Image (cartoon, rainbow, N blue to C red; front, side, top):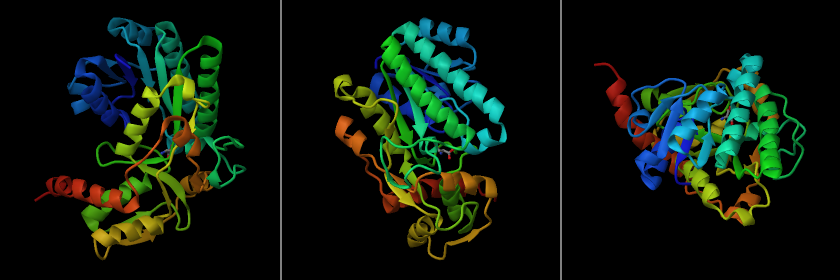
Length: 320
Ligand code: SER
């Protein structure tokens, strides 16, 4: 990785990954792209190009202009939004991915794209979900992710593109809020805890999902991309998770730092159904063995950091 093109660079993962990669590889070597520019640090701290990922020609132009040797394709719709707009999701998620893979092929570039716990479905073993197992998702997002994993493996086998991916769990961060995901409750809960001391969850108690703190997710991307290619038995995509909890457990963790914090429930049937179709906890052994996946943050350590980071911001946002 020397010159990196990132799509969806102003999104949930991209806005932080762009900054981390600029720190490691140099600001001018990380080309951030997104469908619109904004005034965030990711858009302002180095090269930025407006790019709609469904436009293959434009993607190729940007890749050529900067002579990139790595493509990181992050632009995608998350699970709940994809469920609301399935046709649009197919076109954006699959069309964007195909264009990014084609661009990587043309540039002889290394390639990364995230998959998700959403690639699993109701017939997948729910606990310690193995790396290689049944994958029959029942959401459009999941269908996109499984098809995407297969497509990325195909580009490796057929064209020799060095494709790599991670099946991310819910990602939690205090920087850029996610939009339209099922695991987003585990982000919102911290904002509401700091602001109001309570949270109404759209995911029901007893519903377990895998999660990871953003700094661990970013490090995992760098470690996977830097890993020795000959050691990788799997490529698209590796199970990675740092913790699994239900709303009661995250609420209990928050209550340790914000005494009196209260959780209540108003379950959203759409997102609850999606959550129930996903594993309770996935097994990251293959990632550990093949490229040394590790993480620093467990639930309490993450909670402490989230609250510490959100507190000053929240005070600034509260009027008066
Ligand atoms: N965070 C994603 C979602 O909830 C899962 O990959 O859609």
